[in-house]
Structure formats: structure tokens, C-alpha cells
Image 1: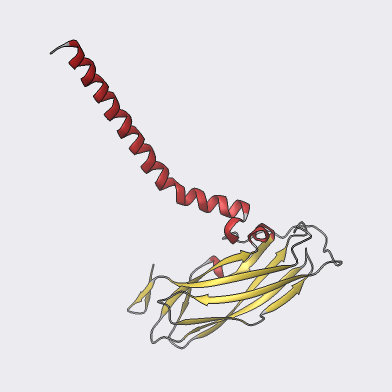
Image 2: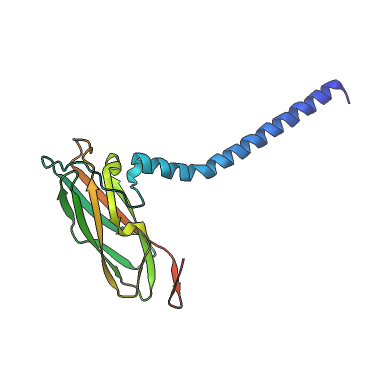
Length: 187
């Protein structure tokens, strides 16, 4: 084999190694992208994501000179025979004040089933200022056929909410979850 052929084979082998390494890095990046995006959205409030666990109430004073309208919107994803309704469509709160809203879940289906409510806040810049201390969205909910349940949302709007934001919309989408087999919950 000539020297030129050896150099050409080495170049081809080097190119193949680089392409394979690039492919492995791209697949790794793709796998890591979803959890990284979720963390980024939760930290920044981008895309209306809010915290998925209880938050501590800040010791900031209540701003009684300002009121924020909080509107509640509910919707169901396909595949879950439930209704989710906000018992109060709108509440007015002072930033820093702890507030309560109530929601009613009804299983209109014929069997035990479970669902989980996933929240989002708009405008998205308001998500980082919306603190949930107690929320049914923190865990999966189970209801028997025909069962109705009322659940609270205890929240606070951070007093650092930008001055131009006077209305927040909290939307819950209800998604189907685990299945019940023989009266037992399977998750």
C-alpha cells in the first residue's frame, strides 16, 4: 500500500471517529434537553411554569396600595372523564397577602380514575412571582365514579411582581394518570 493510500485511510478513519463522537454528543444533548428546559422554565418562569412543590411564604409586608387580579381557567386533556371547575373565577389580592381559591373535581365516568392538574401562569413573566403553599396540583388525585371533591389552592403573589403586571391568569389542565385495577391504585 502506498503512502498516499495510508494517509487517505487515516483521514477517513479520523473523519469517521469525529462523526461518531459528534453523533454521540448530539444524542446526549437531545436526551438532556427536556429536563434542562423544565428546570430553566421553572427557575425563570418562562412558558408560565410554576413550582411543582409547596413554597414558603415570604416575610415581606403586604402591599395594600396595590391589587392584582388573579383569574382561574380550567380545562381537561382528552382521555379523562372528569370536570375541574374553579369555584371562584377571579380573586383580587394584595401582593404579599396569602389568598385562598377553591376548585371542584367531579368524576363523571363509570369507574375509579386519577388525574393530575398541571398549572401555568400568564403572562409568563408573572410565573416566578406566583407562590403556591398548598395545591392539589402537587400530587395525583383519585376519584370514584360520580365522586365530587373540593380542593384548595393557597397562594401568594410576591410583592416584587413588576408594577405593570396587574392581572395574572392561572390555568390548570387536567391530565389522566394511573389506572385502578380491582379497586387498587396502580401507579
